[in-house]
Image 1 (cartoon, rainbow, N blue to C red):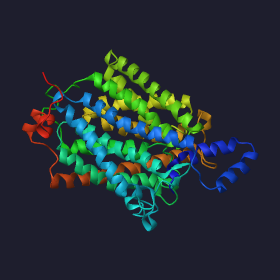
Image 2: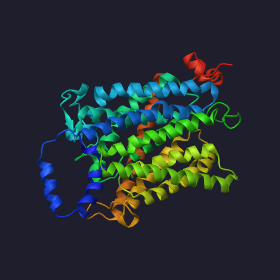
Image 3: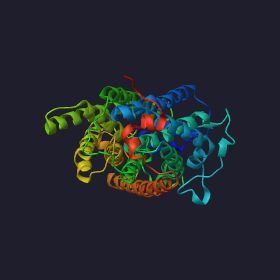
Image 4: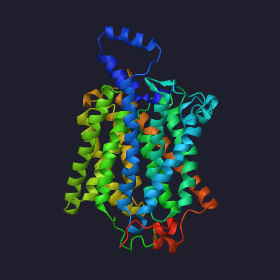
Length: 445
């Protein structure tokens, strides 16, 4: 069970490799499967580094990316939310989150795990998950649990109470994130795992999940005071570019680390993280040039995130050329979402969490089923599965994620609103959350 998220490469990479392997390799594989698990130093070193890289994505990467997108008076509030959200989830993860996500839930195993490893009972320095220490696996998965609610912060930035963010995070990871992680990654008996859904590093679990929660939050918290009238341009595109670059660097841990080993699948995920992102950046700039006459730094940075998001579920399944096309397609649809759909419906998603993470995640999840085809340079499907069948599984997974997260998040926002209230007073919003919520200022004249 522990090494099941070790990953969808067990479905794709391993299946494709088996199809192409010489006959003698099967005996070796059987012998390896029968051998007791032992720690591999190279795999462990890579996973230690990958875990730190994912933390680097959040702090300082995501924090600076979002910080640059808000107004000066709200810079510290976004940094604070990313920092404390991550810290709170780390505690929750080791207390009960890991157990709910990655143990067998018995009669409820389709949707959630059990309290078998509450407080990490039974885990010690000798425990093994695949070829790495279980503590390393726990830590790696913990960073995924941390970044997902931190992504949501960008949707309702500049007008939400700090206490509401923290309470929502505690409830949301418990009732939305942990079940989603279990259903997709925990192994036999879990809903989307049994369907054969392909999600290498978190297209459904992380990005669609965060994007839908962000959209629901933006609507339920309401628009910023003065939205559509006051100037609300990003205060520092420099910081946003720095944050986007840090995210790209950290994302190699996110994607290549999801191979859970220092192997060829990690190498494939690495090159795809380069090529999909490059394809998305170029596509966004080209589209923006035709649409607006100029390519912007904000657009290029958005392209970085769109490409990274789209390739996340596909990183270990598609080829490098397919990844370029996947990134470019996602970039085009994300551009449409943030420039047309957002304006059409008038919701105030401050950092375009839905437009980039939600839409990019949907494109990536469904696109994985297409570009994994060997005819398009991918690793192929599990024996007997056709492209049409795999795409349908991917679509079902997207639908379940949207419904699970959308309904669950709406209920949790309402509960938080009843308990502590979602919004700060108008006076505090006009003053800025840095001073109103934290008594500090990011900049001094």
